Each structure stands twice: as C-alpha cells, then as structure tokens.
Image 1 (cartoon, rainbow, N blue to C red):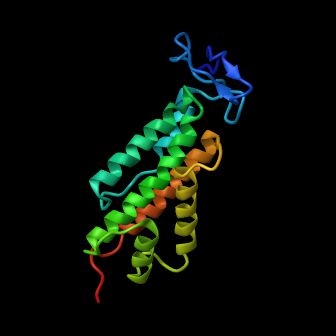
Image 2 (image 1 turned 45 degrees about the vertical axis):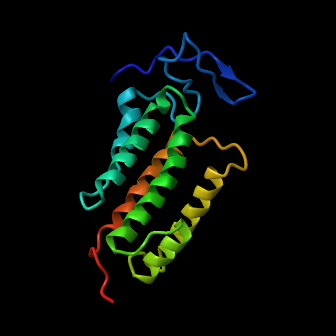
Length: 179
C-alpha cells in the first residue's frame, strides 16, 4: 500500500480556520487532520472521478462540470477549494436548467422561472422539484454571500454526485415535450 506520510502545509491559521498558502508551501498537500485523513493520493482522487455526466448532456455543461471536478480534486492542496467546487455545482445546475429550457425551445429566464418551466413541461417531476428548489436556494445563498461556509471534501464529493444525478435526469427524456 502506498505511503500516506506527506509533508504538509504548516501554515494553519486559527483565525481563518484553514492553511494560508505561501511561496514555500503552495505545492504541498493541505493538512489532513480532518476527514478523510491518512489517505493516499489515489484514494483521495477516486471518489471525485466517479460522478459522470451522460453524453446526452450538452458539451458546455460537461465542460464546466469537469472544471468543478478538478477544483475539488485540488482541494488536496488547498482545502477551501472543496467549498468553491460545491458552490460552483449550484451554478452548473442553473446552467443545465437554462440549457434544458433552450432544448425545449423555451426562452430561458431566471433560475426560478426556468425551474417552473421544466416542472410544467414534466421534465422535472413534482417529487424532484423540492430538491431543485433547495439547490436554487443554496445557489442564491452562495452567490449573494451572507456568511462564511467551509465544507469538507466528503460533503463536496456528495454534492458533485447529486449534481451529476440531477443534471443527467434533465437530459434523459425527449428533447421536446408534446403540447
């Protein structure tokens, strides 16, 4: 088994509650005294590589999803990147909803109206609508900051999986809805 002993950043800032990046440590892994600790690089990366977007999802949505995946993986070096990735997942979801409205040849509007459009069209089920509304609320909260949030990488990878699941479902049905 590969070693889990790494030289790590030694610049943890109690005030910030994360490690400061310096000229000397920017290429070192962040401290691993949080969950998961004692993992190899391979064990770290594997869960982030699991969620996938289907080929039916528009290429631009897949592109931004892959940027987020990379950001989350690099939280190995700077823990707050996991939070940044989670926040960006909410924007990917909004982008995917807008793109799905375009596929339906409906003029995209704001996130709320676009969700209503997709629920009315039957693309998003009534059972799934609360998940989407919760995601929209989180997107609003993280885009119009009301405070500091720091999530652990496990929470971030779970949100990446949820994002993939919801986005894939948007594009799994017919391209148009019978009217």
